[in-house]
Image (cartoon, rainbow, N blue to C red; front, side, top):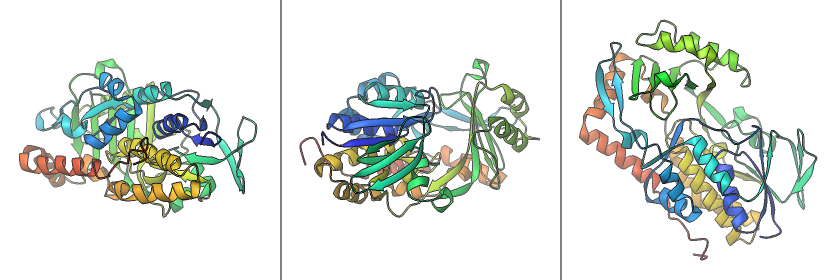
Length: 382
């Protein structure tokens, strides 16, 4: 595959993971990323089970990831007076290995030997018999053999190659927000619920983490001022420490708000363009996004190598190998679990963490989903 040129859109997790494999297999790779650099910080992400460990080990980054892991931390569910109601064990919230998203992105970027175009984005894709002609917002036009959309649920590549977002992304009735509000909010992780609203502080997810039920909101995804106000409005009248947190939101040094959404698409590829990670099978806060991204990158790159760079064969095999594993992303939404809609549902959710039997069933289910694929050894051709 030494003559194969590949453009990857997205430099978070899926994109650099794929770039690592493709450059190892001899491809010439360019990664384009809208942000000015690898994004630091962000919420913690996690890996579960032997499948994830095997891929990280084959990538050569397992030891670094383990060395920088945050460690699964128990989280206490509290009432409005701060009294404990239940404890969510770290093995449930943080999987087997938990690490901040930004630190994982830094590790991946350090292991990729390719060109990065930061502060840029794709504006047009035109497929020809010999490749894909790509225009950028800033860089000059170029031609690539293949283009990969690894640019998240709101994928620009998917929009350009497949069609508008509304055709593939389903709003799931909730929003979430992450805010860095200062070190004084550190300490033991706690989570507070009211019907349809959750607020959490402490731990590696972010200094403050929110999930709330809402009709679909109309806002500009680049207007963080408007997004901050939407969060403040959603939490008016809330108890516990929420008013104190809302006062800090306008000055939060980092802030991110987005909907809980699910991607459903009939095929991961169209011609010379293929989707990877959340762009193809995202489900916000579903707990499997990072694992799906890393394993998906392994399978996509491996199938390209096995097919000698023939994208028609490789893309079909990637989908055949991976769609069953990715079906976990089509299961429900984390919204009603994190922000139950009624006092009764809150009590029932809390009760699941008090029952060793129910907790054991949930942990077994996540292990089953995480290991539900037979990994080929592409290096040996088996």
